[in-house]
Image (cartoon, rainbow, N blue to C red; front, side, top):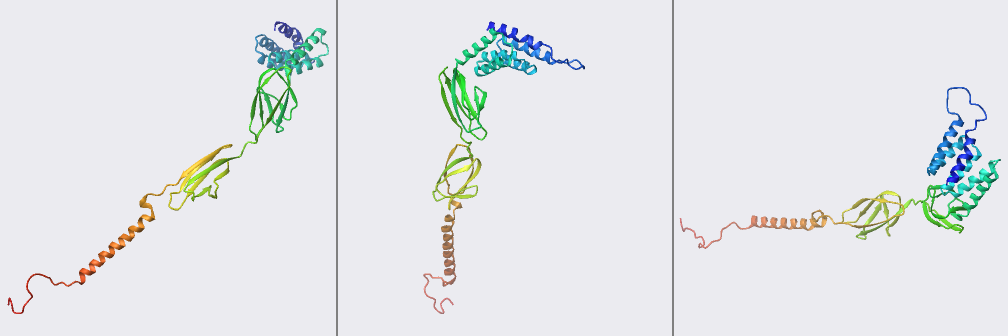
Length: 311
């Protein structure tokens, strides 16, 4: 790492701090592009030497954005390598070799050697992704969109994630061995817009409605996601109502047992009672009539009345 540290400073510092081709226009004092680039570059060097490669990468890229000096690409390539992002490191170093016109032979040989070493640590992974347009991430970094061809991945353990709006995201853990080709297939499924509900109700003759719509047996339904009103009714039973929530990729099992109303609320309870009242009323009426029409004479043990006796 010490060799790279020296190379970083020696290679780029002069290029970044070189004066701009045109003098800044007169006006209130403000940081020139040269000053801004120099500041980002110096911060990048310090962060790289401290081992904070992610922050160093951001600063090197900021410096290159201010002044796209080709030699800064060498530093960016080394930083990608330190982050084990070999694909990005190779791509950046190859761009450096093309864009930089005056590269010392020793530096060119060093860059080419780094590229060869990093390629030996990669494996070609064939990615078969469906549907087209799906976004593909490797270790939480976007590497492209489907359809994709081969992609070189560094040896080791990685997480591949595939996402697209309207589809269920999927992730896969990969174990990559350097130089060993690998084929990965990922098929996304459309996010379901329905769920299933199965209803078992006693008595089986009960009428079942969902959202007011009569449902005929078998009571195995596919319903839109969200809330629905379930109603089950049968003659002689208490009507049951409840809210049913339907979720994606879910099958709900609902078992209902309708209850009978209390005895005093049943019509069958009042019919014999009414008949009993009528019968009792009839008996009472008969008794009243009989008592009204009978002979009012009193029967006793006295001898029959004789004329003249007791006068």
